[in-house]
Image (cartoon, rainbow, N blue to C red; front, side):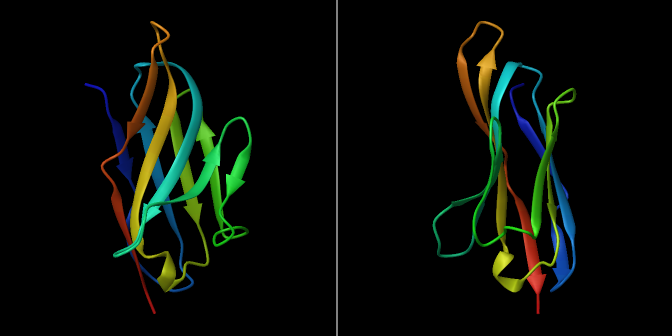
Length: 118
């Protein structure tokens, strides 16, 4: 089954840390971009961080969040430090790449809730 499996969300107090993980399906032959997006209540989904070929961060999370990958396992991580209440959102993993038949594939995870209390 084609899917992304996310884990690591939860509730934490302001200033705390969480680490999100997202394991991509082995259907990918080549992964081009792995990214994390988030959507807060009443707001549009926004890009938080992406990796491949460049590493990019939104201004709101620079120097607090770190995106990394384990390409062998096709897993992307998001280490979130110094969390703020405004980081509260549902976080979604997104992976873009090619299947073994060189068909483009763009997958989204089911989302994981991150809640930061003040």
